[in-house]
Amino acid sequence: AALGLCILLLLLRPGHACPEGCACTDPHTVDCRDRGLPSVPDPFPLDVRKLLVAGNRIQHIPEDFFIFYGDLVYLDFRNNSLRSLEEGTFSGSAKLAFLDLSYNNLTQLGAGAFRSAGRLVKLSLANNNLVGVHEAAFETLESLQVLELNDNNLRSLNVAALAALPALRTLRLDGNPWLCDCDFAHLFSWIQENASKLPKGEPAGRAGQKREHGERLPPLRGRGAAASGSLGAQGHCPG
Picture (cartoon, rainbow, N blue to C red):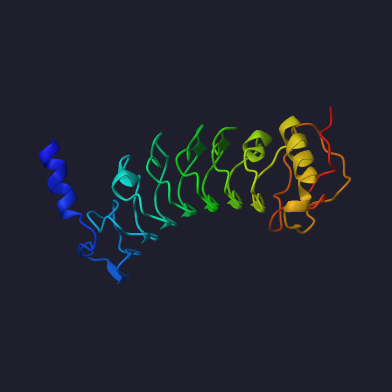
């Protein structure tokens, strides 16, 4: 087993040629966008820092991916077919700062989904099919400044997931079918309390209009959704 690993490391030595069908615009960038790939291309240079694989048919990220490619700083995984993120997917991703997983088929984010990606600055999960985000999904992301959760199927979001992000500056929640329940009320209160560090969104819905408990609310609109009226509700949940 040790011999096999040594051989693999030799094949993946820094500066090794690009994967077949991909382009290397510089020694640390691999561009495999829009190639119809069913899986992450392999192998490519160990010292790659920017990997572009948007517009393919990739269904999962290998569990040991970042163990071999720990120098990655920028990963563009948009418009693929990801359905889930396995526990430990981001082990070894200590340098990753930009991660775009938008336009995939993710439905759930489990606890510690990004646990080892502590240097993430921007995380886009927009335009997936998310229906659930665990309250500990973003734990350890103390450097995260931009989080995009817009255009999913979220009806509620535990504020503990956001409270774990001390550096957060931009939050997108628009385009989700929020329900007026207790979680919504807590979310609304959290956004009001943290409005000073979030950009103001455009007002949405008919502020002040009463709604029945559990009634479906119009999608949030506006970048950031941080203004007091940008959740499209009156600011509290009916009892």
